[in-house]
Amino acid sequence: MDLSRKFVRLVERREDGLVEFEFSIGDPELYAEMLLPADAYEDFCRINAVTVLEGEREEVEQDSGLGWSLHEANTRRY
Image 1 (spheres, rainbow, N blue to C red):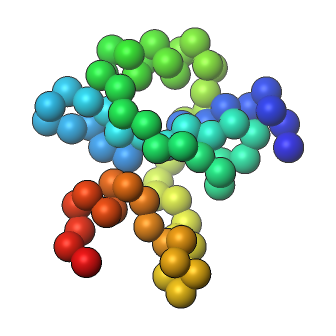
Image 2: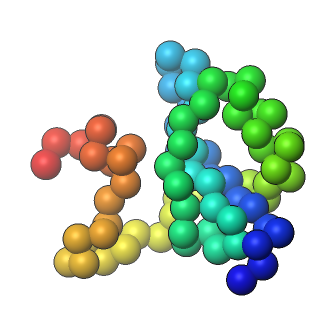
């Protein structure tokens, strides 16, 4: 694992001006879900020299109970 590599996957640019994204260090599969105002998000990406990941992340098997994110929990009805 290369801890000098940092990754961002954009989830959503919200109407309220916040940017929802996933941030990871070393391994894109291990991430923290974050929200920042748009200007702060741009600064965050620049300061951390992130690699922007395209597309949606691969889904974890639903049977494991880990196949969800906070974004999904907030936008879907279970």
